[in-house]
Length: 233
Image (cartoon, rainbow, N blue to C red; front, side):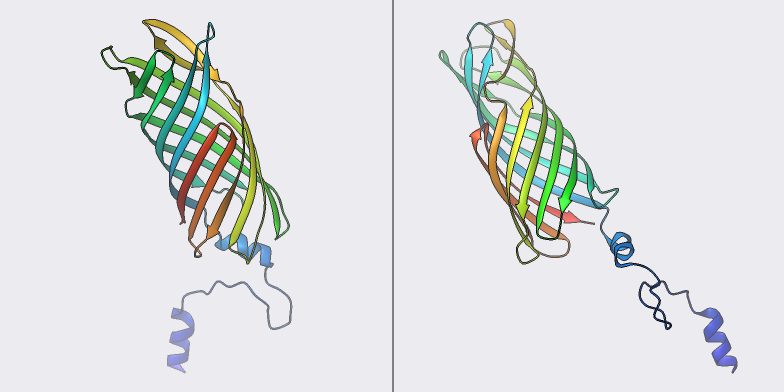
């Protein structure tokens, strides 16, 4: 009896979600899923973009850039994702009629929010938004380097289907815009993209409970290729 009493009073309290002896559920499946779902995700991605820029007085340039980004995301609810990222653009160029201007490495920063507007277990719709900033310098052979600063706001949507509970192909569409501040031939110029949209497709794969992989290709509008990996904490 002494041993039983010691066990009863020293055992740690158990926390469970299930069905009681009377058959009345102690909590719902939705409550259980909410209690155990991950709240944080860390991710790393690589990005290639190709687009045409328009500056004042008919000046146009073909831009190619490469970047890598580390992102931390917080999920306050099952439908809402808030994220912040930092990284670097480490290559690329601006090609004008008078030659090529190479980009120096420069920092990139991102703030974003995604909202899962619809999900019935098979089809899903995610609304996306992002605010980004990038800065670097451009260099042309035989000339002094010039500063380059770009701001960008993007709104988009992803519509896809879930296959085998782990593979999610989707179509994506985005609109975006923002100013670019550059110095060309010792004069300050302001530009923006010729195409303010993206149309493409992607694939997200849940490799394990915590590991997710994705790849995306954008052939229309601002062209882009992105690949990445995310780990849920």
